[in-house]
Length: 307
Image (cartoon, rainbow, N blue to C red; front, side, top):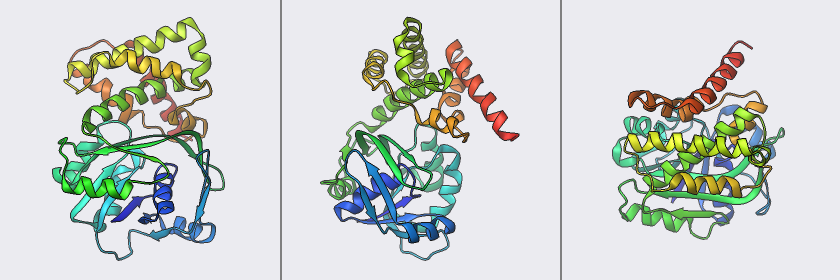
């Protein structure tokens, strides 16, 4: 199976690297300047699950290539439009599009671009970032990628994808209910990123305060109320499940949004908190914690825009 990874960053580079390590046919779609760098340095992964260094197969949007069997998109939401434009020449009639973006809003964008049938569901859990020298640093044992047909069916193509992913030195999980899995991840990442970015600290010090525990619980309940009102496919008692999960995390855990803010980079606030805030307004739900968090994130974005 021919696999195209859009970008060679902290997520795509990591999971793509693990597939290369297994022996799969993986190509990375990158910018011309990034291609030059990677041709010199190779792609380097430093991980608790084992280090890896290799010379990746690389193409740019202007290179010629036959269509790929699957295209894995793991960009930030604000990079999605450009990613779609860049990848169009490499998508054929049978190509599967596997997005790993946080949130839900990107699905309709991808469906409009590629068609309903091509777009799978997907998500990942991995704490990884890019070091200053371009090394992908994966800092916790968790490295899970979940995928599946959005119809819930066991199709021939998903079976082939499962074979390609099987035996990789990372946890690739085929889901029979990827829609629910994506909404559950959306709930978790929206709460985790919002709380840690708002408080400007890792999750541990927040949890240690009685008021912190209360804010986390109430914020999760707000988000669940929105999702229930709009008919999202979430499980009963999911707020409590995610509350316990947040309490079980390492005290040093930070969200990727918080790390982006610390690096003075753009955030996915519009895609995550903003999307749900818009839905809350549509169904006339009061969500004061979400409004406060989104306001702070928008003020950050405004400051960045003028610098």
